[in-house]
Image (cartoon, rainbow, N blue to C red; front, side, top):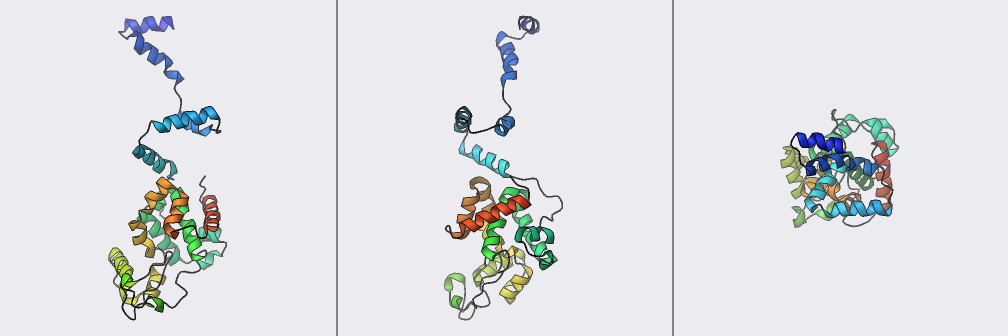
Length: 252
């Protein structure tokens, strides 16, 4: 150490600079620290101290980056084979229109760039639709007639009943989706048309309105479930499907 100090002093470095340089090797690589974390008391104390030094915004940004997965370069995350792995149903039950619209929803909302958040979303969509079996509301929709809060007139209920993975409902919401996708036939033809052409993108405006990607990245799975369901109905099934999704998409 004395020899090193002599050389540094000859080049005009102070004792403090040398000490800082010498002890720099004592710093820690945080990614390695995370890898070897075993919930021991001294480790927990160190992580808690580090967290206390960060602002809420910094922690949120860290959460977004930590939970993000690599972007998908092909734009084809969802395929018939992937659907078979997720649901257990034969791949031939999922045609190109179905998979294409699913991929478009993931790309437009940017869930395709964050595999962890994507698994949260897909698990909830699987629960809501019974593994994508129920893509239209079973009831005839007459209960929605004259529902002013949904923008429905006396006979609009059946035409604008629940459709798609998050059950788009009501003329008002159909109209918003038509504007978003620039397709007036969404309003003109209603439920059957949306179910055939936009089974997944029918959820687009709701996902955007609720800033669902940010919620998933910063708050996690439970908050995603609560936002979609408004409570904890079917939580165990949602959680089980979440585990399936993480396995299929190789998410830890």
